[in-house]
Amino acid sequence: MNLEEIEKLMKLLENSTLSYLEIEENGIKIKLDKNSGVREVSKPNVDETTNSLPKEVVNAPVGKEITAPLVGTFHQAPYKDAKPFVEVGQKVKKGQKLCIVEAMKVMNEITSPYDGTILEIKVKENDVVEFGKTLFIIGD
Image (cartoon, rainbow, N blue to C red; front, side):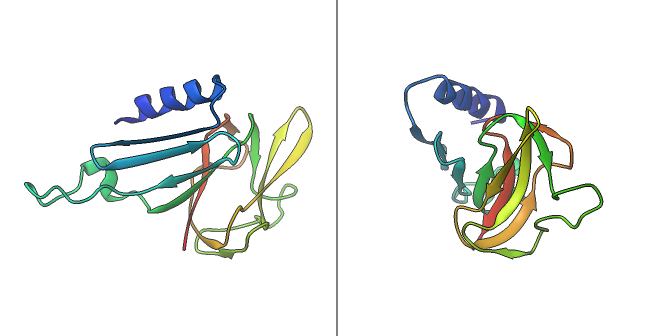
């Protein structure tokens, strides 16, 4: 399953009455939940015949993705030149503020739905994010 196929699934889910979708293909599991903004990511098992992982999966962090619940502008800090809410490697608690997504001049606080460590921040300051766009990957 490639990125284009995953994006199509996300759009189909967004425009449907379904609230949750889970698919497994070639050892890759994808779980999409329209209401929570959280998706689980897992690496596929090693291919026994080649004893290797697919190239695009080798460097992917394993954890849970925090996705944008709405379309808007991503902000890492409460105001310009302020310290970011979180940084890579930082431990976070459930309910802790991770970022702000600004939509129509409304500042929407995005909080962590669980405890963990920030493994990766997938967007940069002032990036425009769409519904379902991965913002953070959080691990245990």
